Length: 160
Image: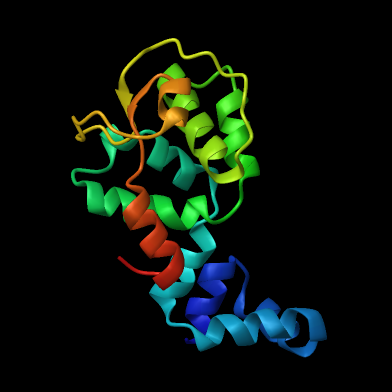
């Protein structure tokens, strides 16, 4: 990756980036990012933002097919669990987002959250009409959950 692309990704000037290369702690970060291509580094840096999680939870506005939705969801499920809990307990968010977030948190951590479903039969993915899922789905008032076969495959192989 070029110096200009690195400075754009990190939001610093090229001069600051040169100074970072001299310090031992930040030199490893610069070395790591420069080993990646620009698009991969950008995806990695943006993958843990709150907007990414909310995009998955509000999938009606962002996804048209289930495979694209799952490609975005599964890496997040294997990552930070605190964000799922924070979104589930946030009273300012709409009920369907809180219900979906509580389901994912409980599925990943096996810990129940006290989220009372205000709306029933909300699908996890908006275009999936089938009734399916485990007890966690019913607990949070959802219509269906994730495909455990595909999720297990993703966990084991890292791909679909």
